[in-house]
Image (cartoon, rainbow, N blue to C red):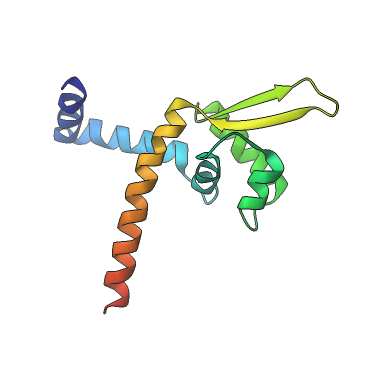
Length: 119
């Protein structure tokens, strides 16, 4: 109930509402962040697998975006002491919760496409 009260309280205050929305946008903004998160929703993944899942992303851009997502607590990076060194990426608990948001975006996108194409 406390979470619902917080959301209701936030929605009733334009300043708090915009602050929360801006916080979310700052973490996921850009062309590549949501595709990277979507690529990591299933399981731990290595860099090259993420790159294969996202057409046209350059290694440099993927590296930059993964570092940014790690700094924002969305992605966890695990380095294994192997030869050569292995690195795996996975979503943090906060990152996993973005999956619900992506589901809603998917629903909205499908409905929006239907309504636009129906015109």
